[in-house]
Amino acid sequence: MRPPIDTIAAPPLPAGAAWVNSPPLAMHELRGQPVLIEFWDFCRANSLRSLPYVKAWHERYAADGLVVIGAHCPGFRASASEQATREAVERLEIAHPIVLDSNFALWQEYENIGWPARYLWTAEGTLAEYCHGEGGYLETELAIQELLGVHREPLAPLRAEDAPDALLVVPSDDRLEPPWSGPYEAGAVWAVLAPRAGREPGVIEVNGSERDVAHPGAVLLIEHDHHVHGELALELSAAVRCDAVCFTPGLAAEQAG
Image (cartoon, rainbow, N blue to C red; front, side, top):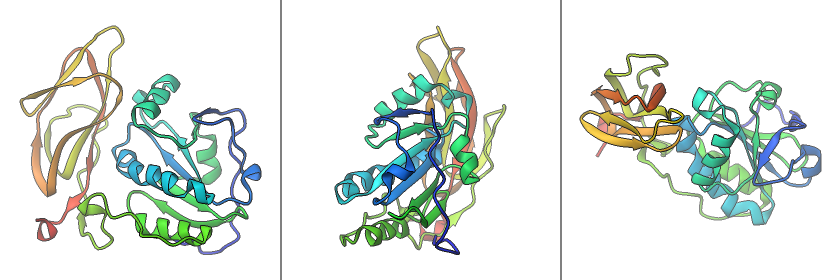
């Protein structure tokens, strides 16, 4: 989405914050290059669904001058650990710089409202484009190309529900406390899980099928090819903690297949 005015200035990056994949960066030192800031959380399903696009933009446009920065803001107990976040960045094979905004300092500077959220800044440090939530990938990539003065085929949608003309259905609200099991409406079901310290291995059972839980994160439990009415039966071993069960949208039935 384009901002209503073209004079919104980029807030400074937080001083003293820890970084992954990079020494500390400063917005004033990045003048002359477009900068994409993505607020994310490795325990948020929506962040993980947006992540492949962010990684691809770094790979496709870093050589042209784009700077991609992920601002990790933990929304769950499972993602509050700096060590767990560093391990997640490695596990998810993220190569672009990550600032650990654990106290939400940058979040507050941006007056951000949720995960994921991205803000594309011009080389002069003014807001060129932004998006709250999933989607808008084509619009963002075209804005990146415009700022860089390059032209190439944009990324194809990675999922049917990412297409610009996709008709999505609003899923059930997230469950932030037990009971985790029960009926739902969604395109997919996720759980925010973490092994309990000193109790390895962690095991869960999802609708009768067992899964191991080796590290904290958002785990895809059930996936459908369109929005459905379903039933979740989730059982946790004593070695696993659940922080939430989350639902992501699916295609309307008339667009599926």
